[in-house]
Amino acid sequence: MPDHAHLLFTARRDAEGWTFALPEILRAIKGTSARSINILLGRSGSVWQDESFDHVLRGNESLSETVEYIRQNPVRKGLVSKPEDYPWLWIAPALCGLCGAGTPAREL
Image 1: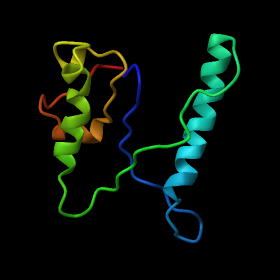
Image 2 (image 1 turned 120 degrees about the vertical axis):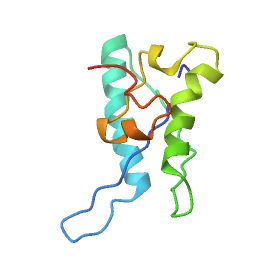
Image 3 (image 1 turned 180 degrees about the vertical axis):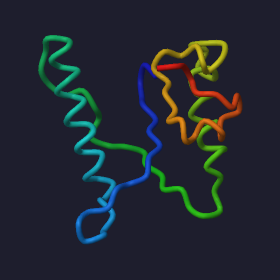
């Protein structure tokens, strides 16, 4: 999306079995991606906002509905007519069965 990103992932566990904290994960993702973006654009400075709107899926929430919400986001924003046409959408093969189309966003 031009002004935000959606990520759906399962947090890994450390050597003692504790789940990595979401703020720690987001800091790593934002830091690494910001460095890469700045290198590609030949600039420096902030890329991401400090805040994030995170949400942890609970047992009664539907993973398939969440995947489909993310898939349809570029369609709702008028960027493409179908999710598969959005070049920045990628869905892990393990989740493709949860998609409305039943197929990945695009072949890699």
